[in-house]
Image (tube, one colour):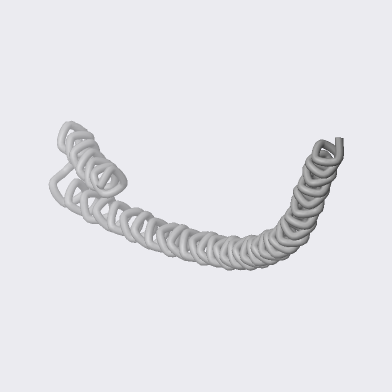
Length: 148
């Protein structure tokens, strides 16, 4: 919008300035008309040059912006793919670690269960043996008391 306004303002200012200069100059009507026609042609050429230059620059900037946006989109896409891959790796690693921990916990629980069973049986045998020893001692004492 600013470039368009500038071009229109330049064109109008040039025409007004040229017209004022020609009208205030002490020349004949025919000379004045010829000079006005020449100035109008010059103004038209300059306007066409400004228009074509602005159009070319606009196309250059549009191509540049398109190129840069494509590069940015590619970089973002690549980085997104890398992040996705890393998340998958971390997830798989966490799953395998969780499975290992679960397996270790199950093995430990089985070992402890087996140890407790063995210990329980051993304790039961020890208690039974001690109870039998105590009963034998009591019977021996009873026997000893009867004989005395």
